[in-house]
Image (cartoon, rainbow, N blue to C red; front, side, top):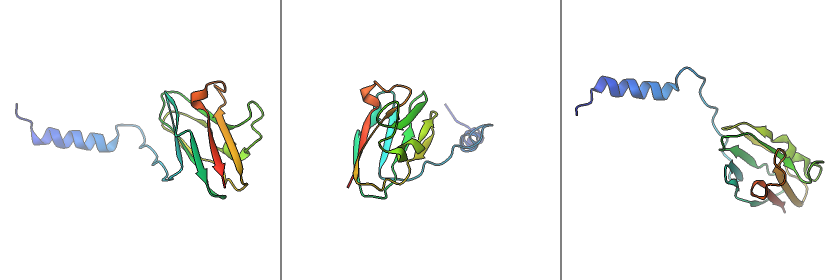
Length: 123
């Protein structure tokens, strides 16, 4: 089977343009990145220095609402509440984690799901 060069170029052009929708926003680079997926959050824990922000990326097909422990108050590490609701494909950083402590987080929409829980150790 012979492929025509014009068809290859047309396919590359369409792929690079992303169709009629707007291009996806680039994911910020952050070595402290939690990924939310259908199987849960990964990794489950990071140890960071005071002043660090952590990034949450939603690679799941459904929305996740990142919130500080304990549910439903979300008062332990309010900097995590800045992440909030992430639609599929979205990402957002926490506020600066400046106080030395351990911060637990969960999915506010599914607080009893242990696979969607994690923690950040600030020291």
